[in-house]
Amino acid sequence: MSERVGMEIALAAAETVALCRPDVIAAYPITPNTHIPEHLSDIVAEGRLDADFICVESEHSALSACCGASGAGARAFTATSSQGLLYMAEVVPIVSAMRLPIVMIIGNRALSGPINIWNDHSDIMSQRDVGWISMFAANGQEVVDMTVQSFKIAEHRDVMLPVNLNLDGFQLTHVVEPMLFPSQEEVDAFLPEYEPYAAVHPDNIVSMGTLALPEIFNEVMKAKDEVLKDSKKVILEVWKEWEEKFGRTYKPVESYKTEGAEILLLAIGSMAETAEVAIDELRDRGMPVGLLKLRLWRPFPFEEIRNAVKDVKAIAVLDRAVSFGGPGGPVFSEVRSALYDEKVRPTIISEIIGLGGRDVPVGDFIKIAEKAARVAKTGPEEEYEIFGVRGS
Amino acid sequence: MEKAKKWPEDWQEIIPGCMVFRPGSAREYHTGSWRAQRPVYDNSKCIKCGMCYIFCPEGCISQDADGYFIADLDYCKGCGICAHECWPGAITMVEEG
Image (cartoon, rainbow over all chains, first blue to last red):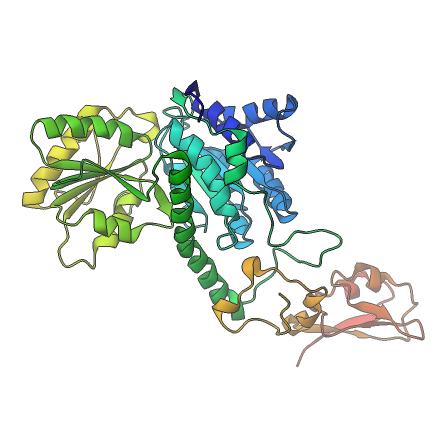
């Protein structure tokens, strides 16, 4: 293993994608993911990567080009953010239905409007139920590691599903961090050459993207759901292999200082790193509080969540997206669903925070943990809260 | 990988990505069942120009041994484009009983 290299995380993501030797990259620039395809186009132009970089005219075309390339047996990659993901939306569920193992990095950004280029998770949450594997990185090292893992998971013969890897726009994409990069040899050993299940070619007889009549559509959707749920086995295998080879551990739900904790915060994405500082401070004050960091979003790790919250009195789930007119943040509603059938379950509250790039300082996590400790005794005070809103 | 059945019975039989590994399988799906009207040819008016054959979006019109045109009702969806394009008025759209 080489020494740590300081680099902007978006560039590190591009360098890591190049290590994975994609055949086709099709992307359209949109803040804050832009540096990823931009740097990949540099890498291709410099001759460091033998890939076709397709400069498409839109994100719809970006994912469509990847769809065609993947159908022809290529390892395909794209990246986007926010409105770009929405512009792809028509193609997003088609790619998973066609079982094409495309990898997409999403530099998470608020959806318009009002127009806002900064981070929250409303983009990926709008594309939640599309049959993709969806994971969140919390820092640059995880972006590097999970990029390589994503290709391996996606292409596994028992999976054959697209993967989206989410990293917070600006908080991660534009931050310089010292990271360990695997060597080309290590990546080649970990990630074998892509062998497609089928590939469109004049010599092969295969039709992809076919029609399914009402007589079969329920069965097709069931099959799509089952393969996504089953992919967790492969995800866990790949993470175990990564740990053995590179020494860094990956779990669907990571825990931090949860030993003896009565109160838990549950966060997703980069804010989980800030939350650790708050946990340290509260533990120093003697408060029995811990942190869960959700890494795997789809398939949702129900069992891991249930196991992680046993013996806990209250959980505050921190969401970076609003489910307008809904039950609370999207992560919250999944966590609450996971616990509904438990005989003993903690009080659970939804705190929506850090929208459109609003900073989430350590003090906010402390206030939320204190609120969780309070509601553990008295019960929830409201359906959900958009935290820190002036005037409320 | 090949499936001889028209479609799988159970969800476990679904081929990944619903890929089809044999050519011409769409032939087995008779889209003619969607039809509400069918084209009826009056060959006394037909000048064998082939406009119906050219414009048929389904590609289901062919020429017989005498040079007249016939629509394959297994696939004809009854859209009426052939009747609309037939300028001698040899084709009439008739309600399916």
